[in-house]
Image (cartoon, rainbow, N blue to C red; front, side, top):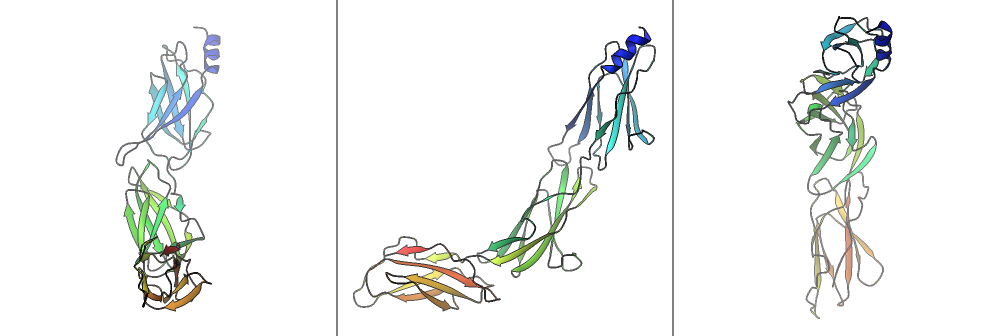
Length: 289
């Protein structure tokens, strides 16, 4: 072949970049590099370097096919290029340099978002935190602390999935972050810390059930309203309406006996009182007759 024809063939050489990602922990992940074949080429020479000038080459390989699989999870940018080789071991021109973006980086928090206000109800304060999952990450380590610098009293949860749960001893401001290891077991970095304001949520109503019909006694009637105790609550405020204006009652225990003077519908809801004196949101309203 003439040198002129060979140069023209190199102009037609193009680069395609793609990932072959692993979808299970412990499996291998790789960078798949592909390009358009060159007519008359007996093979190709490929280089991968840490710099675009290819002064620091980390891979130099010959291949007979128009593709190469690099068994690596790059955590910093790399650059690659390829050139054709004919049967007489003559080289064509290098293709333009292409960038390989980092495959693995510090995980990104998903929820709760930074500065979010989270209401937690029930008998325990259980906070769920989530990160954006990646098939290139093997393990997630979630950290939770009152200290925004994570210098003291740090709780940890390790998980193969991108979520974890923490049982909190009290509401207030908490900070969380997540660090990960990649499929090769290397530290992939740590996310930015996320501040979250945890508050008590609405109490969970126990009885009577919604739309309950209670027997009527013309002499004396008392309806007992019950809800689940919140250990972090200082008390409860119950709002009752039985035909007139709603009336509120403060109680310490999770129940209230309500005298009923007529067989009319009764609706009610309850809120908890936090240590600061602030009311939580009210529960959904229940109605009974």
